[in-house]
Amino acid sequence: MKRYFFLIILAVGVLVACTDRDDDVTMVNIRIQNSTETFFSEVRVVGKDTVYRAIATGEYSKYLEYAAAFQEIALTVVADSTTLTYNPESVFTDSLPIGFYTYELTLDEANELDLNFKID
Image 1: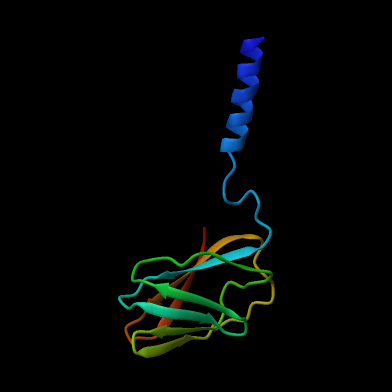
Image 2: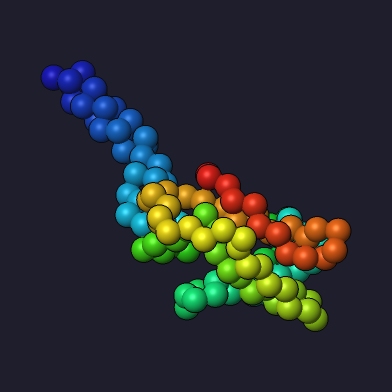
């Protein structure tokens, strides 16, 4: 009898331990990756009431949830003493499926903000 009780407890423990971050996802989750040499005081998503704050060089922000989000979106970045903007070249009409995504922000040779979309 003790053997069956132990096996049941072990099976329940294994099932509980196997849950991960995307088991209970109900919205699109997006974070920002700062791949520049500049500290980002804030990253604002244009058209939404969303602000990512204090993203150090080479670091990631926390994930924020969106009911609908797109592969590219307009952003305004306050970095040190300058403001950078990113405006997408393409217009996406279909929202991303529920999941985890990263907008990697870089600077090109002309010091213009560039966005690289990643699926996590």
